[in-house]
Structure formats: structure tokens, C-alpha cells
Length: 399
Image (tube, rainbow, N blue to C red; front, side, top):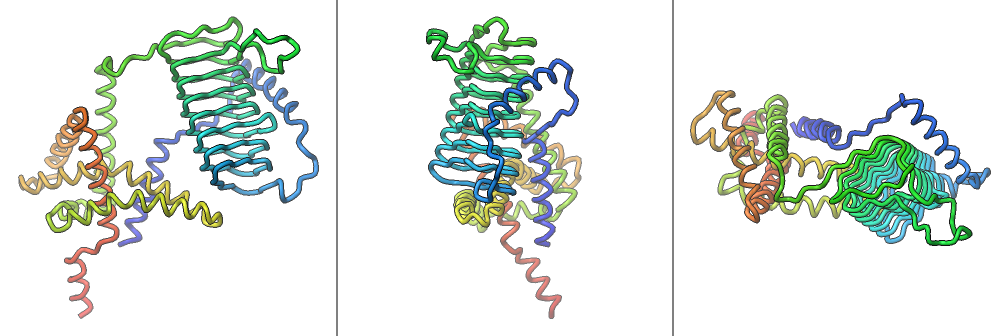
């Protein structure tokens, strides 16, 4: 029974990760973009021409690398993926796979080369070297080097003084592509006086940016940001639709894979069991993060720590849906609704009511936290706590 429950979590993990981390590697590119990319690749190769020919074990890691610390400097070749949790991160070598970095500052130096995607959540990101694709959520983003293909950036300030080989998708407050030209020509580096985007520029900002002539080769699409109080009806409908779809999908999966869990959810919100449920919901994130940090520090068990964080993320992501499903089952139990179509209708009504309550200032945030805590507690309780009825039946069978 326990194995089946973990199989369910694994399946939900794959579904949610597939929805939240869509990574597309386009193989067919247009002739114009390919030509621009070739120019960028040539410049990037010239910049990395000083890579040593003789590589020793000390400066070559032929596997995935997991790093934590205050100041982390990657000055050796990584033939795999890079995972970093640190304060300051500096990449000064070649990364053969993807780089996942959570840090205060991230700097890719001139000798740094990320052959695949750079995913980063940080305060300041500076690209002086080469990155294949850039996905960043940060405060400040500065590109002085080269991005081989696309950038997708959500940042307060975005400065592009280098080259983007294809398209740029930017959500920011301020966008700047003009380099300071007051310096003497002798002091200028290989960086252009303005940034270059070889493809299209799609950006949203508070006001339209001044785009230098010749800096964007393709089309420019600008969307002005709206204030929070100017949120359109379309955004509300999209938010409600997403929430309803999540609840319905989780409910259908539970109905298909573990119908007994749906029947037991009401038992976990009774007077006797609600305190353990709340305890599990509050302690699980703290214990999970603490264990993950310890596993990352040990080094050998870093993969287990990463899987633990992913599992925790998935459980938190589905906890609100589990809370809605539990409320729905409680209402159906009180109203003695037994048909599936009736439960489905009440489920939609319950989800809409919770979504409307979440829009109330202050109160909505509190209700949202309560839903996450109770939903997470119900999931953990169903996995870890034995049902007395099942235990008694097993005892009778053994007798």
C-alpha cells in the first residue's frame, strides 16, 4: 500500500514538473537566425580560445556537480549539469550541461561558457562570457557577453550591452541597450556601444524604452505594464480557470489511482486528528529543507537532497487542491451526496468559493496559508499514520 502511495507522488511529480519547467530545444532554425548564431558562436569560440589543451582530473568533472557555500567559484570544466545554492557564484570555466543557480549574485566571466541553459533565481546576474539560453528571475540583469539563443528574463533592471543570438523575452521596469559612450575610444573593450539582439524583442515595462538604431534585427513588441488595481477581467478568468483545472486534475487522479484516500480525507479533519495534521503541515517544510541542506553539505548524498526538494515542492503545489477536495468530501458527507456527478459539481463550487475568498486582502493570504498547511498535513498523515480500522482488520486476519 505504501509503495502505491509513493508511485502516486512520483506520477504527480512528473506531471507538475512537466507543466512548470517546459524546456524546448528547437532544432530547426531560420536561415537568418542560424547565420546570426554562427557569428555569435565564432566570437564565443575566440573568447574561449585560451582553454588549456591538457586537462587533469582536478579541473575536469565528468558528472553532475552540486555545490553550496558563501562564495562559490567554478574554475574547472563540468561535463554535466551544475546545481548551486550559494551567496556569490562565479563561473570561470565550461559547463557542458544546464546550470541551476540560486544565489545573491551570479557572474559568468569571460572564460565562462554554459553550453546549455542557465536557470537562475538571484539578485544580480552578469553575463560576461557565453550562455546558450538564459532563464532568469532577478533584480538586475546585465549581459556584456553572448547568449547563443534566447533570453527569458523577469527583472527590475535589464542591461543588454552584448549580443543575444536570437530572441529576447523580457518583463522589467527598465530596459537599456545603450552603452556609455562618454569614455575614450582607447578605454573601450570589445563590447559594442549598444547591445545587439539578432532576433525579435518582446518586452513589457512601465514605459517604452529607447532602442538604439540597429540594435534589434527583428521585430519589436512592447506592452506597457498595468498597475495592480488595473487588473483586467481576463486575468481573473485565467487565474480561476487555472485553479479549477488544477483541482479537477488532482481529484481525477486521486479518483483513479487512490479512491481510498478520497474516502479517508474527511477522517483527517476530525477533532481528534486535526492537531497532528496541522503539526505535519507546519513542520514538514522546515524539516524537509533542513534535511536537504544537510544532504547537500555531505556532498555524496546531494542527489537525494535534490529529489527531496523536488518532492517537497510537488507536495506543497498540490496541497491547496487536496484541501479543496477534503472540504468537498466533508460537504458531500454532510449532505449525503454519493453520486460522482454530484460530488464533481460541489467540488467546482468549493474551489470557486475558496478562490473568491483568496482575493480578499489579508484574509485571503491567511486562508491560503491555512489551506496549504492542512492540505500538506493530510497528505503526510495519509502516508505516515495507520488507519485504526485497517490495523484492526489485519489483526483479525492474522488471528
